[in-house]
View 1: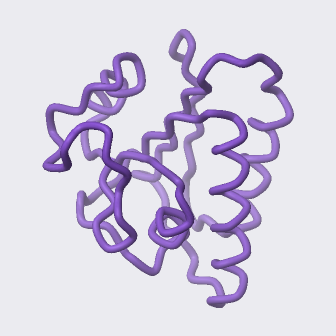
View 2: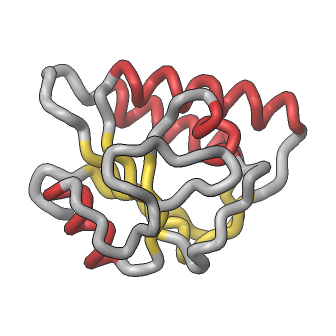
View 3: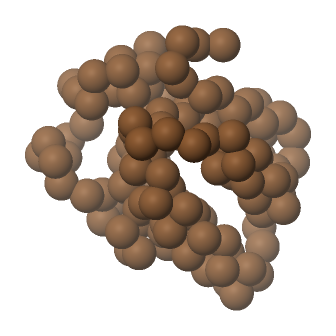
Length: 134
């Protein structure tokens, strides 16, 4: 556990239902106006493909939930190459800002400071659906 950062670690097959349950727990436990900081570790898991409708529905929920929570979300992944058809890629097109990392230390630094020295994106710019980073 990291002070001030909610850590969600997934293992094995990761379904949208698994991710939605975790997001609902985070949203339900957060009740003050400070920025919520979440590290979502996907390095030990594999996303299970869902239908486009299910992915789009959850992506919309992710975008609206974390926007309301004023969230700063870091994804820790095996690869820095994003999948534009992923929940995050679709949510980015709906205004969801996140960063994608392969290094936990870099992810934590970004969550704590807002600085991502590993990102090629200009500071303060929202990630595009075809080039999410974090």
